[in-house]
Image (cartoon, rainbow, N blue to C red; front, side):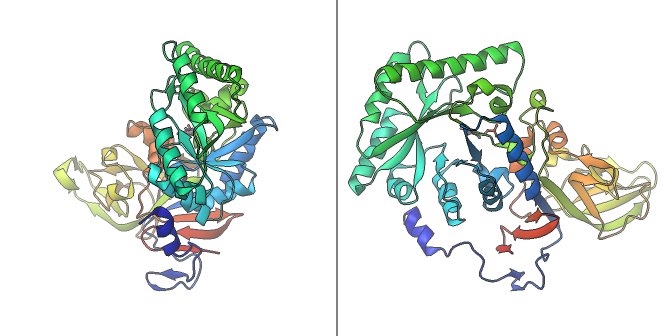
Amino acid sequence: MSISQAVQEIPPSVPTARTVLGKPAAVMSDFLKRSWATVDLDCIGHNIEKVKELVSPGCKVLGVVKADAYGHGAKFVARELNRHGVDWFGVSNVEEAVSLRRDGIFKPILIFGTTPAQYAGTLCEYSITQAVFSTQYARQLSQAAQELGVTVDAHVKVDTGMGRLGFLTDEGNLLDSAQKIQDICGLPGLKFTGIFTHFSCADETNADAVAYTKGQFSRFMEILKLLEKKGIIFPIRHCCNSAATLLYPQMHLDMVRPGIVLYGLSPSGDCGGILDLHPALSLTCCISQVKTVEPGTYISYGRTWCAKEPRVIASVTIGYADGYHRILSNRARMLVRGRLAPVVGRVCMDQLMLDVTGIDGVCPGDTAVMIGTDGENTLTADEMATLTDSINYEVVCLVGKRVPRIYMQNGRQVGVTNYVGQTIEE
Ligand SMILES: *Cc1c(COP(=O)(O)O)cnc(C)c1O
């Protein structure tokens, strides 16, 4: 079955019934308070406005909402970005693109990754723009489009030093690639409306990295110049991810492609403090039991933590199956009643334990905050990234599908996306 057939058979994702656990939801706020991610759409709105202040009026903004909007939920995030006048949307694949269309996004959508040529019809039907990165792929897509009698909108992807997808532009390949791009531009069934490249270290500000990024940009300019001499001009030339949007205004060209900053997170430490960003996502769970344990008591699998004196231990409702990495065992902290409580023992699949000794009045039903603010204290995705030897991107992308996303706007809850159950919205 083709994706487009599949899409037609699935009812539109506009909810028909508000149900929780199979029963009609009494109120909008009904969701299982086990572990949940709260996404503040006002923060998304704030962040996109800050990005827009950086780019000149003639420059378009493509909001990157791949990977379900970096784990935040593409439907609500894309709608908010849409309201704030984002011109384009960027996704990784055709299913994400079609799903945006079903969620009521009618702006242009660019797929960064590959789409099997057999979906040429879907691309055309849903007016989705496809990245084209090689002659072979261009031919396949062209042939599939011709067979269906359709034309697919496309952007050429050039590899200026990322080493991922695209026509090579190093000295040895530059002329050849220009010729190849000229050739694919003549293929029937494809209409090229843009050209782009991607930076590999625009988020690093050391001299070496800056030189590399500038080198990538000049290769991009070179191939554009060669193509122009052949009479090939692309209306939309783009290369800036979040970091380059912040650090290299001279490279904005016709469009920028910010992702991570829209979610209020910095691409790296080197980019910190440039924009006033508001992190949109917080992650919360609940305490299920509190008990005082005797010295010598072991906590969790493998007996990796032992109480040396009487301690107050709280069991909480999140585990590695929710995206709370097991590597955080005996490492991370959470906020309970606004105070820091260390994770003790191994993180289990669905639960973990905190040492809440010295925090007054902790009781079952209290919340524990993993990412976000409670009282005076804040825990960030960046901190969790450091502890997991990763980056904030991965931390938010890996929030599990078992974790419902709760959407806030103007201090009100405006929707819930429950990946295990269904979508509820107001
Ligand atoms: C993911 C991605 C972006 C956005 O990157 P950020 O660092 O999140 O801003 C832009 N362009 C392409 C091609 C991407 O794959």
